[in-house]
Length: 81
Image (cartoon, rainbow, N blue to C red; front, side, top):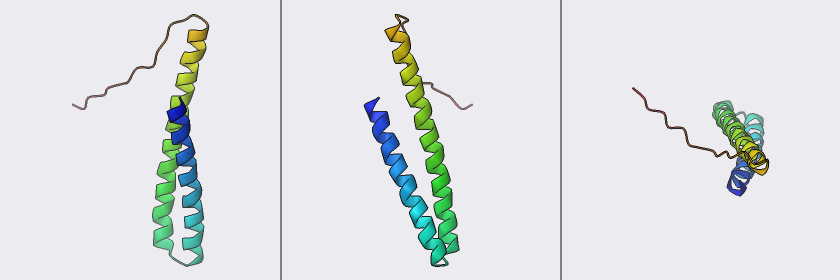
């Protein structure tokens, strides 16, 4: 779970940088660049949401295991037809 925490911190830093960059581009009148950074920000926020969901899943497994209920996280494999 430490790895997930590190990924969350990196994603949060990226989000903060993107927000700052958007503000700078808007002030300079570079609207197209600001719009692209906004898209990047949106993608980073979605990624952060997924990381938090993964972390909650791992915490749930830990809680269940401490209660004596054997549980584990498994990777989901999706095949496209």
